[in-house]
Length: 175
Image 1: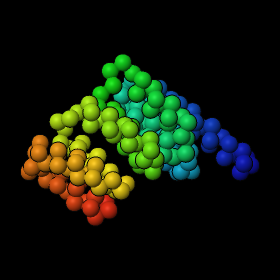
Image 2 (image 1 turned 90 degrees about the vertical axis):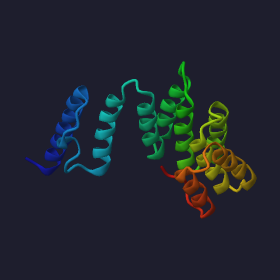
Image 3 (image 1 turned 30 degrees about the horizontal axis):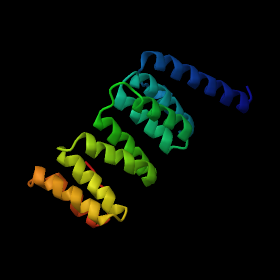
């Protein structure tokens, strides 16, 4: 058998295994082991889409991966679909805003972060996180307003103190 034929047969077999596993939503080593990284990622993403099913946060996670790995249109479609849902929570909006922030698209992230603050005015963690993003994007006044609200709600929250300190040091907030 010729090498190119072997490669084609292996590719078909890998695709068939991934499709079978996707029906069962199960990840097996055959899906990614010894595969070209791009093919491994695509096979795993196929499974992830099946695993996400109708879960909101799960679909946002799939959309994030697509968006950040160059399949922006596909990722955007998933994010838009989630945000057009009947009962969209502040936690959905912040997850999507984080995707845009991670993609270095502050103009898209900012209005979503503002929406989170409006929807959850008593969430001290989100105030600190969003304040950190504002500071990192040069709006110190807005950042300090959000930090003040966060510390008013919980002045002893270590993680929010760290979010603010990190932002003043040029670091993005992390959980």
